[in-house]
Length: 222
Ligand code: AMP
Image 1 (cartoon, protein in one colour):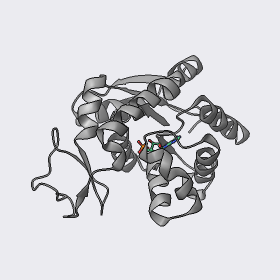
Image 2 (image 1 turned 120 degrees about the horizontal axis):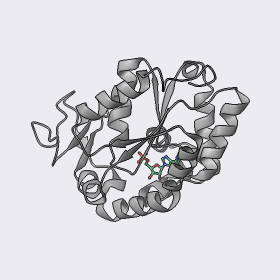
Image 3 (image 1 turned 60 degrees about the horizontal axis):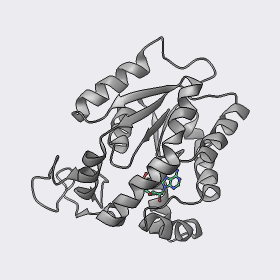
Image 4 (image 1 turned 90 degrees about the horizontal axis):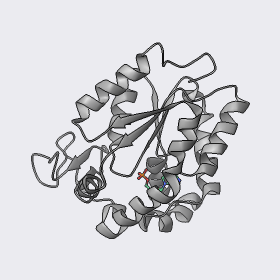
């Protein structure tokens, strides 16, 4: 499966929960890049400047990283790609890799959220430095400011959730990623999801769509 949507649309939150509930691997390209940055690897250093300014990391860096990930044994059964692909080049590279392995995408979900809601969500978003839980000072505040309810870790704001970077990321989405909607629509795998609703309602819809026998993966899909 692929989760498409602007930054702040809730892809990560839904992907984590759907993956946990269905024994599916969650692969977030943004999390993978942040791990590389934190570890100070060559790839992380190459990605860091782009990420801080809200721009996309170059295709040649990200495509190799994600394709290598989905070829590992723990990705053999089923996965959710969250945040990848984000350009037509990336989508074509993914299709080629899947075709070579006689696989295909079963579902591509497009998370639809109005622009003003995205801006509010992103600038109010805080992430736990220890367990990765996501909090939002407007919509889902932690009981104690700056502290994760789940594990007690310290909450941090991502550098790319600052207002200037948020505007850049939303523009990048419209220009470079939104064209993927037509790409996947023409393949007949795209499902629009109204993601401006309570998270539990969205999750229930996703679970229903992936278990609907009329929409379930064919023998060549995952
Ligand atoms: P995310 O956590 O998905 O919002 O990603 C954070 C940042 O990582 C993005 O703003 C990009 O700089 C970079 N990034 C993540 N996924 C991709 C991708 N598929 N292509 C290019 N850059 C990406």
